[in-house]
Length: 292
Image (cartoon, rainbow, N blue to C red):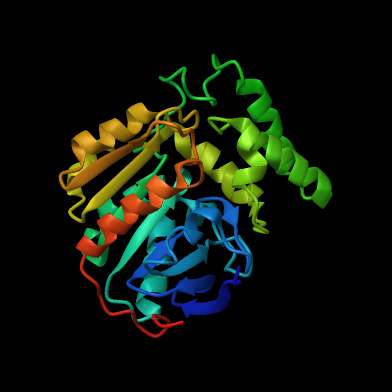
C-alpha cells in the first residue's frame, strides 16, 4: 500500500498538515478528533480510486497549528479552517466525506458553505446530539456496554500509554462497533495507525450536549449521500433517516450487515455506492495539489 504524501499548507489561519493520495476530483476527508499520518485512514482509502483525496489534520493534531483559544476547536471554527486550506490550495470547489464525527463536521460545512462543495458524503453520523434519546446508542447510559466504552475512551486519552497497550485498547473499542466483532482481524488488516487527540475529544464532549443543526439542514444545497449501518451503535440509523428527510438533495443507503464501519464491513457495496454517486457530481479545478 502506497503511503500518503505529506504537505504543510500555510493559510491565514495557521499551518495545517494535509496528506494526499489518489487521482480525480478533489475530496477533503477528516475526523473531528483523529490524528493522521502517512499511513492514511481506512475511510479515506476508500475514495482514492475515484478522487484526489486530502486528509486534513485539524488544529492541535500532528504538525497542524495549535489552538490559541479553546473556541478554535469548535466545529464552526474548524469549517473555517478547512475553507482556508481549500483557498490556499487554489481549489475552486471540492467534495467532503466524513465518517462519524467527521460526518457531523461535514453537515456543518454543508450548512455554511454549500457553494464551495461539489458534494457531501456522510457516513454513520448525526445532525444533533445522539446519546440522550436513543438507547440503541452505546453512549446512552442505558446501553449495556456504555460503561466499558467510557472506560476505554478515558484510557485511550492517556499520553503515557505504550503502543502495545494503545493498540489492544483501541482494538477492543473498535470491536464494540462491529456487527461481527470476530471479523476485526480481517477488516483492520492494513498497517494504518492513527491516534486520538485528547484535547479535541474533550472539547467535542463539551460541545456535543448543545449540538443540534437539524433545523438548518434545508440550507444544504449540494448533493448529499448519507450512508449508515443498520446496526450502528454510535450514531444509530434513526439519525441518518432524519437527515435524509430534512436535506433536500440527499440519498440514504442503509447497510444491513454493518454496524459503524460499513466501508469495511460491506466494502464492495460501499465502494459501488460511492462510485455511482461521485461521477454524477461535476469535477472542479483541482488547484496546486490536484495532481499527485
